[in-house]
Length: 254
Image (cartoon, rainbow, N blue to C red):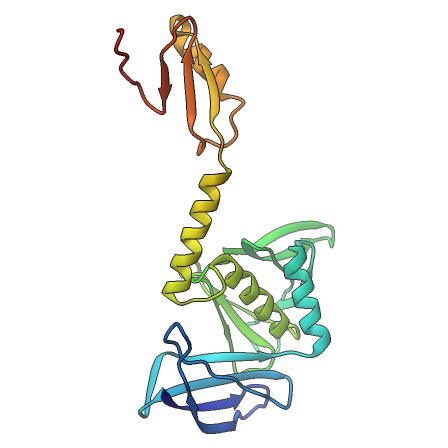
């Protein structure tokens, strides 16, 4: 059993206010983790802090995205179909308040977060691209409709969009699917092991017939048709009974 204190702040208002501050007593589940559940009366973005014995726990600062029912269905449909043609309008946050900001479009795929601009409204041009992975972070700012995307390598990009909640939810859904449904180490390891076993079981041996007299040319010709080099190679030399599995093997008769 654990006793925690959770504080939620509404980020939609100009002056964020505390909407929940309460002590929660939760029993640990079978994995030894504490689970917290929230019921919010209004949609929007909420910044939360979880404390244990008056100290903020590791990863205790988080953001809750509370969407409308139609938005939830839209996100779930996009992620389930892995639809790469869904886009969201946004603008690059201007350096001066008097400026409007360049209009761009946000695309989220299972692997990439892309920000594109269109030249003459026809020709697409990538403005910003990063991978959908744990090191890529979306930070929602207090300023209305503003959020920042960064991957730790490129300069952070600040965008303005009325769809920032949907963008954040779609990104998070794809991220969790990529890493096994949770950001804790045990879940990541279990997911990695399952994917590794699945990948191994789906592989089949690739038969290669090589002419030793014309080794280079025949090897090149045989490998041209192989698209995935993770498969196990079964090599047979023309006119010889010995076989090679991945590397040269000795033959008792040789």
